[in-house]
Image 1 (cartoon, rainbow, N blue to C red):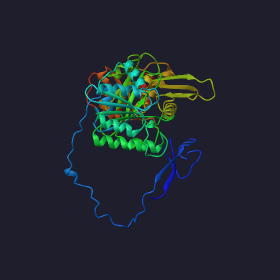
Image 2: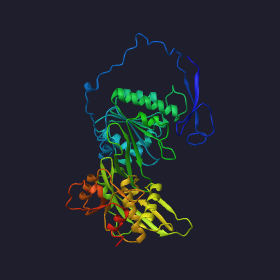
Image 3: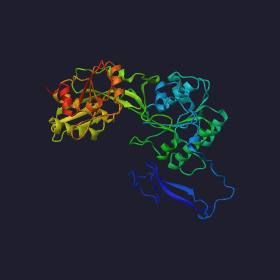
Image 4: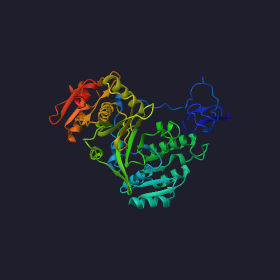
Length: 457
């Protein structure tokens, strides 16, 4: 055997270095480099022929490959099934991340209880005792005879328990607190997380057992550990929201078995996570249509169109530099749109404080929301409500309204919710089918959109 190779890996970003440094050269964090040892492979002649007994990997023409439909079973929660792409795929490895206290463990305990009504489930917790989990289960009102609990941080012991029980679903809470004894490095280090995830993936695939693992996040909100953690798993679900809002959005950012950017909407209550089957109705029921600075757009999240309210407040600044604040919306995108409004429409915002917020604590990053945000800011500046109910369109630097994708789905959702007036790009208008109950107004520039909304006579 060769001498062990030593290198140092950043616990935050996974950057590797040949020597220890106080500060990671990649992410700039201090004291995050950890020693990682791996034995060097045996020295072999790279020009030597293959061993005569090496079996060849089987290959076959692409046309002869038979496509089989994945079997899925329900999680017991329609919103979670939607985020997973239609249900749970046996043998898949699913990673759930999110801020502390957002509801990851609560959701997985509810999931385990639902599945345990018809299948055996093993809930492995390395962070909480069995009595703590039982207390939460009593608070949530969940009980299932086929739900088994195990408390251990040794991955070998957890896999041995799973081998004995043969569950259909296994939950690991969390991957950063589990360790493999044969792997060097401390618990939660890059090497440990990578090794434990790899072994769980092999176990899930070879035995047809679905494994859900909980992942911690860094202070920037990204999943902790190496990026290979997200590459290894089949599905990555991320909880969005904060403790100040009751809504929780479970977003699929990677899915080998379904659509990405699919979302499920929940509310956090004293009895656990409750599904929001019709979020459009819930998000708009408290909206005051006569208030200035309020506009609605239709964003498509995966396969779900959602009507989302954007609010803006414009007030004269008391300082030399006006304040710009955005909640739930990209700050740089907001600054760009404010510059377009000032240059192309003539709305003087250089001496105005501008505050922008997405109602419900939802994060909105689709370009389709540009037009709604611009109308909300113009409405707040003039202190007049909008005549248009929904606005959709991407705004370019020249002030033009660009077309957006899946406009037929968006307008159909507006019709379903009883919307009667929609402003949209003129290029999209020519390709849409007839919607007799909706007045569709096609615009080419921001100025035309503001005039169509009734803010400019």
